[in-house]
Each structure stands twice: as C-alpha cells, then as structure tokens.
Length: 232
Image (cartoon, rainbow, N blue to C red; front, side, top):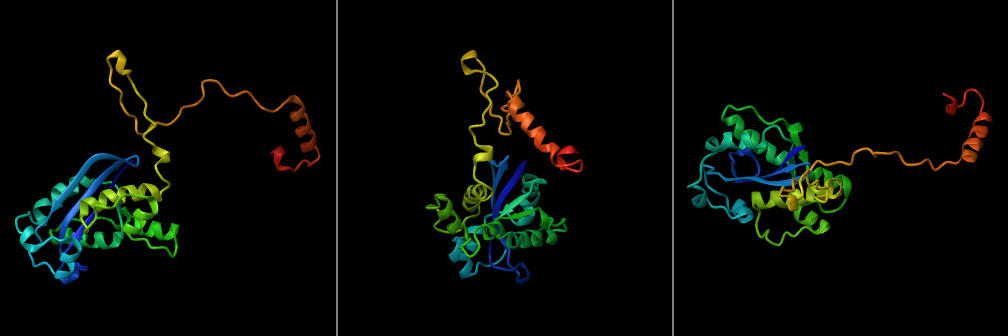
C-alpha cells in the first residue's frame, strides 16, 4: 500500500482571501515504511508575505521570488502523489489550499476523501489532550529538536513517524520482516520484502485435546437438545 505523508506552508489561512502555497513537502510510504522517495518544492506565491506567516515558517517574499510558480510545478507534484492516499495533519487546511491552486489552473481538485487526517485520528485516540504535531512528537518520543520553525518537508518526515505510531506503531510492518532471497556468502544480494507475511505451516500442529476431552465434550453437547448451536 502506497501512501503520501505531506504538508504545505502558506502565506496565510484562507485562499479565498488571496493567500497562496509557498512550500510543499511530501514523503512516500510503502506498506507503512518510508521508501526514501520525497517531494520538496518552494513556490513563488506572486504576492507579499504577511509578517504573521513569516514568523511561522521564515520564508520571505524576496527568498521565494526566485522559485517557480505553482503552475510550473503542478504536473510534477501530481505525478509524485499519483492516486495514493494523502496523510496530512489538519487535512482540511492543506486540501483547501491545494484545490484552490489546482482549480485556478483549470485542473481537477483532489477528492477530499483521499485525505487521512492525523489530527482527527489523534483527537479520537487521545480526547482532551493536545494534538498538535509537537505534542504528538513528545507523546511518541519522536525527535523534533530540528523544528525551530515550520517547514513542509521536515514536518512531513516528523508526521510520517507520528502517523505510524497513531495507527499502532511499527510492529505490523517491522523492518525485521526481511526475507533474504539470496545469501550474500553465496554471491547473491539480500533483498527486503517489506510486505512479507508468514505462510501456512508445512505440517499442522498436533491436537491438544485428548480422546477423553472429546468424549466429555460430546456428552455435554448431547444434553443441550436438538436445537443447540453446536449441532448446526
């Protein structure tokens, strides 16, 4: 299963007021494990940068003036995310901005149901507790010491770790589930099967019930009458 964990930075809170995306960061997961593939792009918003937004992410209009506009990167961004679910913290915010940018170019908006909102997951799991990204990093022991300001790629990488903890930790797809297809000492190369699952036993386990156990069970069932569930 392919998923994209992503984040955006913007010039403000609402695209309806003329605010734009200035940065997109995304991390690819396959079977809940990072593949190492990322997407990261700064974007020229073609407008000024309000002081409130600059205080959050530290990206000035002058810094972004040399970056491509959204129209120039839209195709590459859409190609990277493909049809995968989008894992986003406070998904309604990012989806609102992404769809505003896409709609302005005459492109189809991203379906809202594609988004997996980790903020909503965190609030269901820990009602009444802080559910911001920093708070979740502290809860799960994720090192966020490099997060002095918001940054789309760094926040995506942190969110990928938080997301795996929110859905039950790394145990289901632990990297220890490696299946070497060739022994290095035999001249082959070990390959990782990230979707490995144990197969059936070559021989069934021996039954633990004795003949006496089975006889007692049959005698008990006989006392339940013809309509008993065990007789169906």
